[in-house]
Image (cartoon, rainbow, N blue to C red; front, side, top):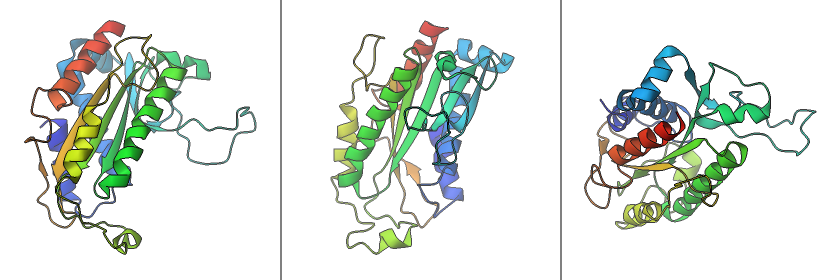
Length: 248
């Protein structure tokens, strides 16, 4: 199976999962890494030889930040954010922060299940902030971004507080289309001199999932990207292969 199929299969075996959790994102990241290793001879060889490794939910140095408490030696008062998937050269943790230049690829995943009107802008800005952070620390790193967009008209939110909202779980017919259309406007980063805030590759993963039954499915009909066209999974993988080849 491909990463999108793995993701939907995971959903159907974890009906009612909380999209704020990390489990579904870890499944998607692992499957993308597997598919990229199969599609890119250079990436696959480096991964199988141990020349590169990937770690889930860590910062650019390979360290996971679990606490909001700042380290005593933090001068800027900020904590490096965790990223869903970080690929490291040399097989492990990088000591100094400057070693982030040894990170060839990162993957960040976001999800919009409902409340599209507010969420679409926030997640779009998340993508820009993620790319800005990655390229500020490591300009040569590939920043890959995925956005899961639920096209279902009704969705049962696993969060009891969220379900109490007046319009909770109800999506208008054009909500998903407007969300997909927004992410289709994203410009890709084509070189080191491009402006900040652009990712090298973006995948729009459209699904139909009601939050209650194991009937989730992939959506590849309009307004979702069709296979092979920009923002589809095939296009996303092709871009990652090309970008990795440039840096290998």
